[in-house]
Length: 453
Image 1 (cartoon, rainbow, N blue to C red):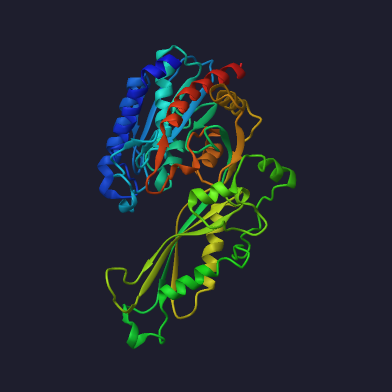
Image 2 (image 1 turned 90 degrees about the vertical axis):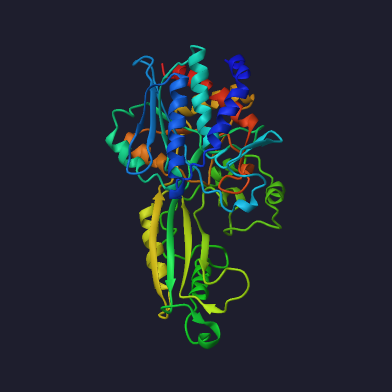
């Protein structure tokens, strides 16, 4: 198989570059045709790789690409999940090269979606091709590639509920996470959940002259900033009443096990050009971004932001806020607590509206399962070292949904790096990582089949 991979390396990369040129931004309706074009691209590549029954399954939004190869009903079945939509590329001016004109520089592919998730999803399509061409497919395989992950997977749960027989499998395989380093592979064993809201603060019924009205009426931007600042105390502890009621506290033994993962605080600060780190008192950086819940403002706007000066008190101010959740918090519970608290701290001089967007549940996957052990052996086979189990600070809400609806655990075989700048300008994905994924994934199938007998 490795010879086939080596012989086709350039073609694999060029196909990925072709897909990266399509701006499949699901959040922006102006890219609708591009998102649909990407779905067609993925479907065609699955057909060419040897998948059967490839179809674009319509949803209330963008289609889900489905394909399968059923080798033998007695063999285990792997359900591969990924997504073909990408984050908006804004701000465009901060990109070193256009986000949808991929370039390879210093061994890295620069483009929006290079790592999240087109590059990682496409590893599975090419790994499938490799196994098919080498008569080495040891499991049945089904593909479910969606186009709405970056906007909350609004229609995926309905599709899963309505297609349980079609999606029947033994394990779900996902590459939408990262690893500690190219010399320190890791497998993600936990993900934080998410509560995402938008808040709106309204003062006067129109923008006002800040000289004539300043000091006499509430400024919605001032008020919003005060309210946001009040969401944390001096120890960076979230002040929403009951926010931590159900938080699962890890034991000192579990925290000590986490601390075994290699981590350099100096390199972390250097990579982000930070003078120092910041976070909840009593926890170290790797705990703050994985096992502790958070509240962050993702965007804030209002008033005049154009060139020059315009002295106004704005009528409205807005912010988008996300909260990352840990076991045993739920998105519904936290969204309601946020709404109640945020409304309660608003002064009488303004009106406040909290609009829930989307949420997802935290999840921890077992490390003693056959699937995890097969993944660990696959990494060890191709990287030469055992992978480290780690909890990620990110959220993949559908992992918990797959467990509740299909009764299946997911194996999170990520090949990205923290430095890949996903969701940021200059997102990239290492050519080494892309090719290593294609090499490692077939090993998972091999070991999973052997260990499932």
